[in-house]
Length: 345
Image (tube, rainbow, N blue to C red):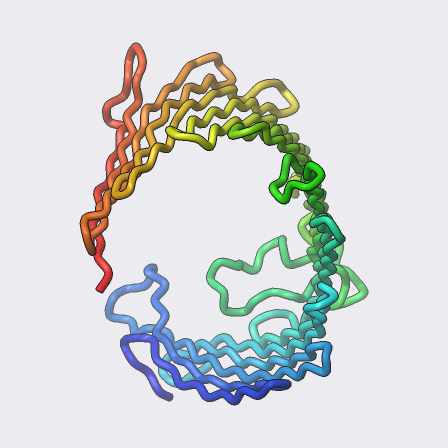
């Protein structure tokens, strides 16, 4: 088994006007950070290959093998087979994958489809669907643990097996621009999005919608947006979150910006705030000062003054940012600042 203290790999590929193919192998030491320093690190070995053909729809196939081992003995392994079909001109895509793991209860499947359409005038609509089986889970991703999210509730094992429906999501979105006759620049827009996600194994689901309306009058731009979300936790509790926000920006110098918002849940207001700032820019300098004032659910006010600056000094760039709480009793310990200098050669 090959191993090294740093990530290494080798890859080869071929490209043609109608097809392409590639293959790679990579190995990388993995440290969890929770083990004694005298223990040997785990070795991650990843091998993959793929091919795609355009006639004119693009069909693709991807296979991969992932293994984590210590002292030459495999401890976790996973095999992935995926296929896809896409039509860039029509904005349609569909993909399917099958994953088999030695550390999990068996194989799992995943299906995804996306459709995007652009109409004359610039309007667009998009629809996305993702669905995985109950057995779909990564065997080696440290961010995923084998808990109730990937298994049926205790005492309710699904008799349909590993390909019973698991977590899924459906999302629809669209945008419609408004233009005055004979003018290319938008005078406004309407944008919306709605989604629903579910996980039967964990007993959770969430759904929501977002809507935004924009209008331009001369150098001023106005946008009003709202968000509504409802989530059901594994415990059965239901939480509601709503947000309403208005933004105004003046595009002429010094580019004034103002935002006002209010968020609340099922019990009442959570926070209400306003922001006032500007973004003047010169040839070698750009400043972004601002002031934010917000009240929480208890009626306590918090204020924050901030400024960001970017200066160009020949081949060098200097970036500085600072934020400091202010008000009757500011907390100086909550302030922050950052200074960065970079160059390109």
